Length: 104
Image (cartoon, rainbow, N blue to C red; front, side, top):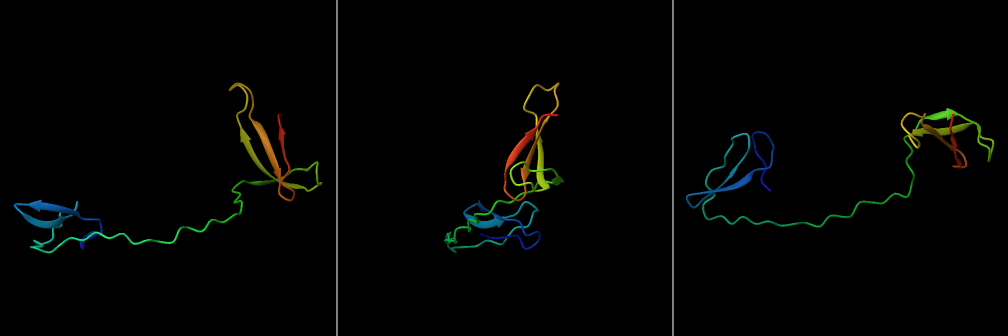
């Protein structure tokens, strides 16, 4: 891959009248490459690490868990019924992960 010296973008190979050069979207152009060979190579990279951990991005509110009596729970809402009815509130205990819903 060849990157533009002016803006840093990836440059595209341009062949004009039998001459090879690289052209960028910003207008920068390399000189004729002549008989130089353009070689593409792909290097193998390590696969990403898989982390077996639940990431929770939900707010924590005061709610009583009926299973473990903990006072904190995650909270979210979903429209489970008709659009003219209120949303269903879901809670998940921070400690034991018990999930329950509130229809009010």
